[in-house]
Amino acid sequence: MKTAIVIYDKINLLSFAQIWQMFPADLRSNVKICAFKSEIVDEHGLKISPEIYGESLYGYDCVIVPDGMGALGLRYDEIFLSWIKSASSTNLKIAFDLGALIYAGAGFLEGKKACVRAGYKNALKEYCEFSEEKICQNDEILTICEWSKEAKEKLAEILGIN
Image (cartoon, rainbow, N blue to C red):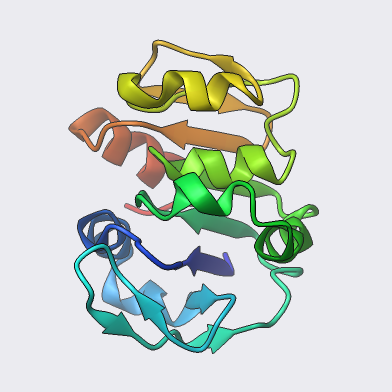
């Protein structure tokens, strides 16, 4: 499965690391770290250079958006969102916590349910119905608001990772 993990300014590196750890070493060659720009700065000021930047997300089987405070502003950034929309034909879109706001801003959650930590449910309600569940799946979109054993098992199942 060809997978893209999207990184963006003010990303939560712990969220990224938890996602990265899901993939065994032998499958990581199919996982690309993608960004809209050539340099990303995390929530604490660490500069990160993505593997791929500025290229369309078209052609990936799965696009994953980690948690991060940067999602709060990016949900209104039409240029960034047009890049995210290049993943419209992707079979599986996964978002962790605030990352759901990026998919919401891109219009992928319209008419659907999604989850996000409770303090941000009003932000999510601007776009879709808020779910109290910790894991919410709608068609090709999976939102996860809390990293847990259940979330890890669900991801392993849908990503085909043992």
